Length: 605
Image (cartoon, rainbow, N blue to C red; front, side, top):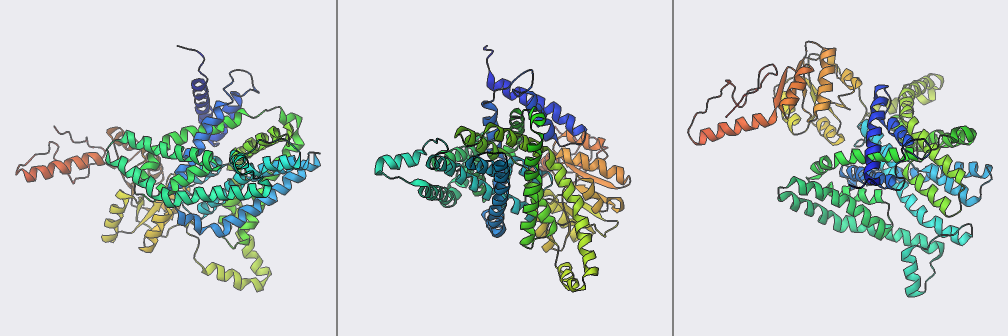
């Protein structure tokens, strides 16, 4: 067996160290991604010991970006994208321009050429896809209005960077500041027709290619991709279905990059978005989730590999200035832009926190700038340091925004006393309904709490409603929340794993809680918290295996339903009716009987 296996050693080294340091960071109540970044620094070339392959790690990380954007596309419809274009397009453009101007000013102050300073500013203006989406997913905000605006903003930034990657080499060649390779399609036009596109032609060509790709995906992709997945699903092979999901995500992304010059992330996003119109989209998201998480971890490891800790000692002031532009400058600009569009303060703070970091496009721009001779090596090091530190600080930025929001709202109310003329405007705002993703404590007591309103939860909820039992639903899907509100059902938007969400549901005053979500890890955490807060509460949960039943029982569940067993019992009962036979139940439980967790599961021959 050959010992020279850089691909295997890079994956193993990156994932093992990421697991160790990620678990350690979680133990210290820090985001696991901090541990992933530290793992990358340790396997990078700037620290002693094992050094991972620096050419393979970024490519592996790119797969994570592709799968992540594909997953976002699966939960993001064209209607959602168009609904936020009014703020995402002008907002992203204004924020990019402001951040680029700040970066250009810092570069000029350090004596860099104009082209290098502009590349530096552009690199500081675009947020990381992985970090932004991870932050929104952890807070269950992807399907809310805030999440839609943030993702739409991100798409506009990606399109702007695609255009920049085409224009920078052209501008460098025309301006004489560097040497740039000729874009293949332009070279072909020159040979065939003797055309010299110039910078204006390059802009037009880029826009045409992006528009052509979007048109093909919306016209043909919307029919071809769902049809293909349905045909695969009809084969009954889960293996082929999973392979088909990955083939579509990676194939469309790669084809979009090679044929149309569109970023891999953007291509994967559109592939997911057209598949989202199929009823198989939920299953496709589940099948791609494990690889999506694994390769997203490799992205953070690859970022850490690029970081040279010595720059913290050699260039402290330039690093502070760079971090100020990324974390403060961009965030404040985004906050003011969103508020200028008359959006709620909560939305503005979420958007500003989401954009207060940089990532993968910044690295691409930095590498391109150095390759073309526009950006000095010092600029690339500052971009890398700014990315690492801003990613680490991003969770803190979210925390500060959450803490600042009550202060700003309180100050706003105090201004009414000082300025009576503003009282009517404030009162009018208070009369308007809150934004969909705002959460408020319930006034219910002695009620039932239903966690999750999917296929199982909806049946439970309908029965609670028909029996006039007071209850509320905790759900993280914006679409389901809207449907429940239309039915007059009280809802809480959020993740029931978070103690704050359970407190808003008045867990201490509830009589029962039904945990209808299929995720056993989250169900166990909810069960544990419910039992600790309210020892007398009735806890009913669902499971998919005997091991999950035992685990939920261990954490305090009173009743656990294993869906597969109940289905089997129902099928046996129906077959017995058809064949005029009476099949006794050894344990005395019928197919519709709810089994308490402290009773053994029925064993059937």
